[in-house]
Length: 127
Length: 227
Image (cartoon, rainbow over all chains, first blue to last red; front, side, top):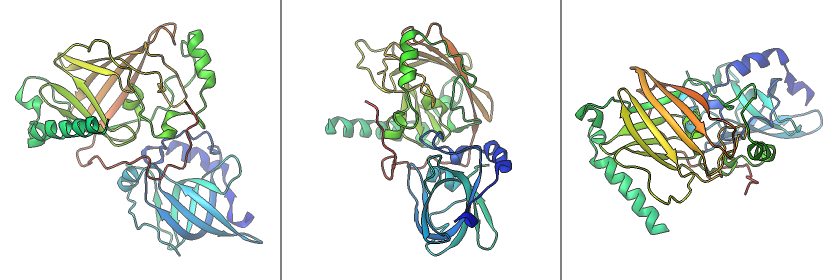
């Protein structure tokens, strides 16, 4: 687990600066740790292309067990404008997600950036 | 109730279908009023109207703000309408249509429709509603919108700034250049605040964007614990 969840406070400033349309939620961000950035690598088990939020579900291999992570994004209208599609991720894909973890310690992340296994990146920022 | 909703949706559809805007011809182009039609997106998300604090809260407003918790009782968590002015501050696009008797705003988000009536005064004995009753008139290049008749179920911003049914919002909406729209908002609510205050939202034109469907209750994993 520890190997897969890295926290980079230094990048948090950049993430806050990039906070824009697609990362807007219909709820406040008070429940997320907005001062630290977390990075999680795992295997996609599901993708909800839905409103008010889209979600990626990940299996993340820990030291002893597989952790189930949920990754929250903004609305699909804004995600589409940021370059996302309903088949952007598929079950079985190995991906890395970077974002803000829930303050309560749950395996729940609010996404800022997705990195595919080939190194290609996709953010939630609409230009 | 269902019949009323169906009628209401049909009326809006008919109005838009018959309108000059729907024929690719804006009402503004047929008359001398300014053209503010198009898809607009906020340039900056402002979750708090007072980012550094200092809202002029009256005792009633202060007590209500203490009850507000963005994690549990923000009406947005229950996919309820944002109300005015929050409707104008949400960072998802809105499209403005101008027809002869009203300005119609369709928003991608929780609350889909706002209507601003150009040809009448406020109705008497208004039932309090989430969006209130908006009437507008053109003053030169500025659409002045006056809204009353609110219920007290919405927040003014994402921090939970409250308002009562006495809320009175005056907006001055103008297109400062081809790509830029500005909404100067004045909020007055003597029950919640000791004095009126102002806020401003700036929008950029997004000619290539279309308003997308947004069904908030489709997969809402949050629980609204408000009243």
